Image (tube, rainbow, N blue to C red; front, side):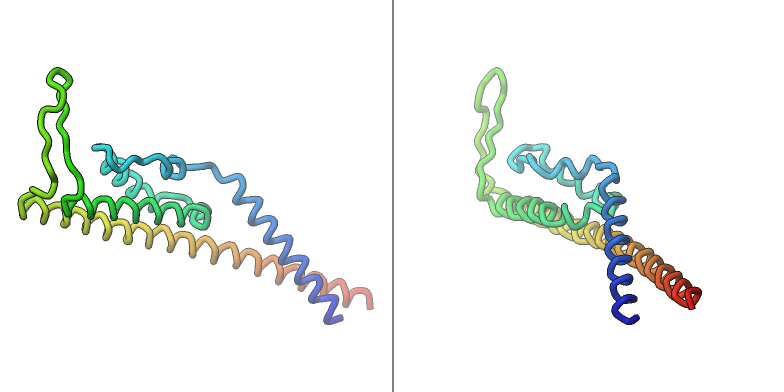
Length: 171
């Protein structure tokens, strides 16, 4: 009897797990999931793209968390490293005018102390915002997983009770 109930328990758990994965497969994609690849940090609009993506993170569906967390972290950490180098003056800026060609070349290591402080302050703000948004998304994911597990547990409980009822009805 014990082995029989354990095998039912395992089968029900497998069925519940398959059902939860089937539900995951039909969740529509969000725009943020498609924007990770291809952000060129050297472009002037990369900061805008990163901020927009960062602001979309808390609204993302929790089912994407396991698949996307690594590439989100990698993308943002790469951006933070790039931004840190920008703040330290590791790059040169060229202002290009369509009529005159290269108009001005400015080395970023010649940033004033105030400009560097603003750059570092912006970097810190971005990093803190990233951590806060990732926390919100992770919390949503953990709540989602918790709800899925409760559903599985409820199904297992009901199937076990049904099996016990059937076994006693046979007597």
